[in-house]
Image (tube, rainbow, N blue to C red):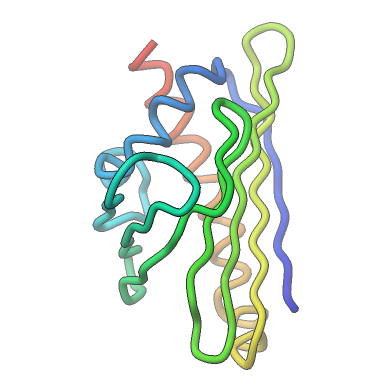
Length: 140
């Protein structure tokens, strides 16, 4: 297993961030690494979707955990393994929000993720959080 975990604090309210992240079809409008995204139903556990990130092939995913304004997680299949990711939001005093992203990869593609995708994913987390902060400010 390979795990990446990063966190940051942005200026945002959890309710505004939640409105942004649960509008999956609009992810490409604000997230700098998303090309296409869709969710085939409500933002709820068990709902499937599809996403294509810049420079990567598209992939189907399933929401595995949804706690409104606090956490959402999803999982997708990889050849011989799985990719699981969670997004946690903790409201802090003064209009600040702690964002934590965890990604776990299992299976034979672990070395590829560790040496190729890992650094890029970490950078993308911070780019996404910066964009999320701006988008959440616009939807208040």
